Image (cartoon, rainbow, N blue to C red; front, side, top):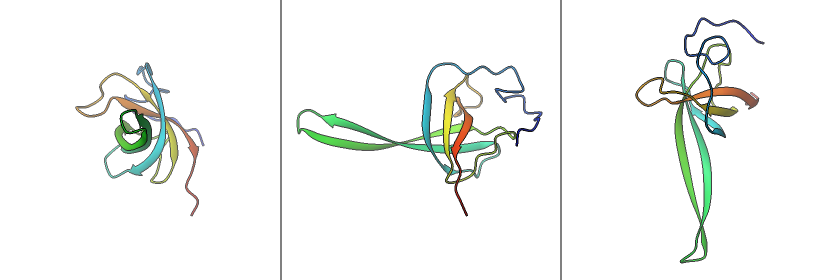
Length: 100
């Protein structure tokens, strides 16, 4: 399934380095060109009310042609240098694919 790509922003086949954090999430949109939106749920405790707060975080990430994540896939993304105005993350691997 590995294939060569000519993407200059691919971390495997180009000079882009993965640095910083890694996040696991679900791809909720793949409408952009080589871009996916990865959503993750964050739970935190609010000490004043002793309750759990749930928040969703949506992160735009670069989707190289050699990985090609689709909607519903569970992926790991890693932090990179700024690729575009909003993208500073790249898809590293697909953990689980959506079955049709």
